[in-house]
Length: 335
Image (cartoon, rainbow, N blue to C red; front, top):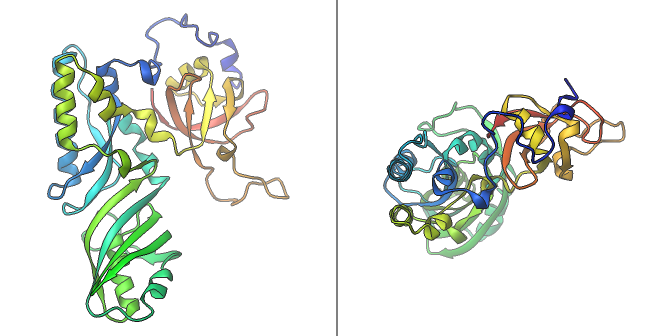
């Protein structure tokens, strides 16, 4: 079975019979295909919950699908990049349809926020130095209202910049590991300053690989869907992007189309089907030949066909240059 790909149809040959599981290349999909495997870099407004915003996106897209492709299925749901509290605004990339299978990719990158720190007294003279001490690996326990277990854990704050200080308020920019609680971080910074503090306004400005330079509002999406129903697709293709755009921050593995068809049936990616592998997909080996971090999982990778169609998420477990054997174990099939 290691060499199963050798007997598959040649790359680009659809003679395997039956419906081909491979999608059209990202730039060649119809509007219904795009809506069923897309991503919107959504600017969440203050007020509704992330869950409510996702429901609005799902319902709006399903109405358009019913109009443009009544014989086809609805989206089946949407998934966002990580919950924002109702009052929090900003970057909430939202996956549609089959793209919801890749929601875990947002756990692999970093997130960036701009927060107002409300100090309970005048900032001390060494305020900036105190804040800088939190630019490191920190301990956090999730707040009582969180949806996860309240166990002490570590998170990395990659950058913590004081953008401005005015009276008892400080404007902070935070680039951190996914899962960092900014409200708790602000509370802890306040304790360290000796005057106490809490988080005021919070806006998420980036979720890898998206940022706030091309955010789209709910109104943009609704307008774009309405125009698409009237035959004008241009704005919709700007608002809803191929789901592959949510994978650009991951190391990539390029596989033959024949290998991709095997993946669609649940097979791993075997060596004969591998065309190219990013260097970052394979952990570096130490002097003893073992990869760094003996117990650490290899990085999550995204597999694509040569024309850019997302195939699966997985991890490199074998030698890409070998003659046989599994190279990528599967975590999510995206076909």
